[in-house]
Length: 138
Ligand code: GDP
Ligand code: MG
Image 1 (cartoon, rainbow, N blue to C red):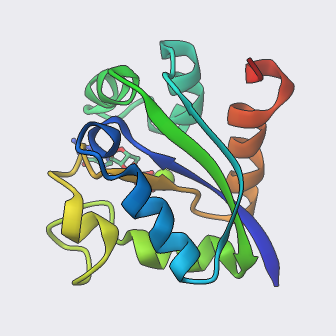
Image 2: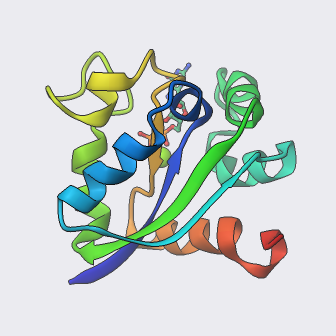
């Protein structure tokens, strides 16, 4: 089924000049970039994006990380895009992710894991509204 998913190249990815390389990985795998912007997230947006993790001990560290510099937000379209993008991205912890996923190749640790991808069609809808909806259209 044709799907859309939200991908964020997190600040550590942008800092290390990985933006072009990571976007190309999706295109190389027959996925299409349909929206794209570079921006810095403020605390309010970061808190909304990660709302379901608000009670975790690492929440504040996560907010500081995700807001510390520019990130690249995009919508990626394609057949089974949600699942296929998560496969390319790999497990949350770069150390346990399968070999050759983006996070094993480039993630620094469990917080600074270089990239975000929506985990379901429902999350993708919510996150696309949050990052590209009218509320945050600049
Ligand atoms: P994801 O869907 O694979 O990104 O993982 P989650 O939705 O569970 O967590 C969101 C983000 O929070 C992750 O991508 C990490 O940046 C961070 N994170 C998740 N779990 C941990 C953890 O146990 N420790 C730390 N320090 N950061 C975490
Ligand atoms: Mg998640």
